[in-house]
Image 1: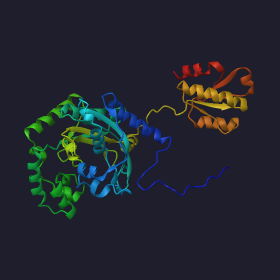
Image 2: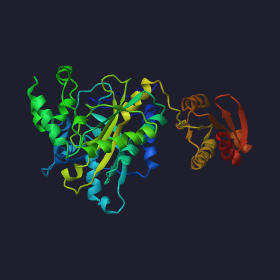
Image 3: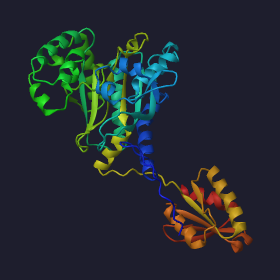
Image 4: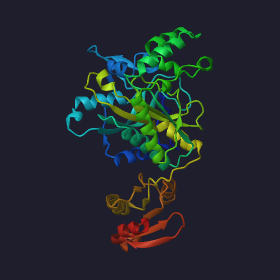
Amino acid sequence: MTIFPVSTFKAPKGTYDLTPPDSAVYLAVREAISAPLKRSGYGYIETPGFEQVELFSRGVGESTDIVTKEMYTLTTRGGDELALRPEGTASVLRAALEANLHKAGNLPVKLWYSGSYYRYERPQAGRYRHFSQVGAEAIGAEDPALDAELIILAVDAYKSLGLSNFRLLLNSLGDKECRPAYRDALQSFLRGLDLDEDTRRRIEINPLRVLDDKREAVQKQLVGAPMLRDHLCEACKEYHEQVRELLTAAGVAFEDDEKLVRGLDYYTRTTFEFVHDGLGSQSAVGGGGRYDGLSEMIGGPALPSVGWALGVDRTVLALKAEGIELDLPAATQVFAVPLGDEARRVLFGLVTELRRAGVATDFAFGGKGLKNAMKSANRSGARFALVAGERDLAEGMVQLKDLETGEQTPVALDAVVGELLTRQG
């Protein structure tokens, strides 16, 4: 038995590796989330894993936990201050502006992305320092139908995976016309509470974030706080009502949550979050909203926009919580087992031919004997094994074995590909 040395290196704290077979579930989740977007005019965009720190401090917000406590930052040899991206929207909008996509004459610019993001958080189930998201952004249009479209696409993605125990929380954060008066009223209320210094500082910078504080001692004091719904201007009320009507007409259930503000400063008007009741404290599986002023915050023109990001990791946890096992295609459909050097040469050519015909095929590498090679064939999950020795080849045949039934059938070499394509359906 070969003894392999044990590596002294491990994945950094709060991170994880994706390895087969579990990685296939993550790929399937990414595909399911992105599929409705691809059918709806969203094009793929990919941005660097790091950006200038200022992009996030301006866009995400100086007072947010993400910027003040959770960003991984570094200084390059040239003195540039960079940060590993903690979220996707600011990067995507920056890239769209830099490429002048908004000047192509077809607004909104509809983009989707998939990637890893990084936040220095206390690791726990469902919360990692490296995590994966699929996101979508619609840039350059102010239309309640666009907000509804994105929410519906997210709901359809979750349902396509078989999820049912998720809830959609919905709110409106108003706009630059009605937010200032509400901000003043909320600040006046919050200043009279018994809060710690960090929270009191937040009152002056972004008081809405205090409503998002999950600590019970804070939530108890927020009873009776002024609500934004009572301060919305007529335009924001009408806009939000249209979003609600469109969702209802599409059969999308939602819960109005007047305290929902999300953790990023750039949101305006429509704000939403998807939560799953089977995940404990880290119940949010995705969310987003409208961010009409973000483009101007990072130096671009006025481009009202809306978007969301859905957590791949937490969606996988939600599937487990509901006991859902995805129906994934076998990684290997056919496994070739050669007996002898001539059979290795012939079957290897046949493996290549099958792969080119679209059949997932693997090969018994390493010169294994029949017994060990058949064990490998069974472990691979393949439905069929192709077995050939000198006598088979002399007759121009290979043995096709059904690994589920045990049935073995001789098949002419030149008919193998057609036979397997027929059996695969």
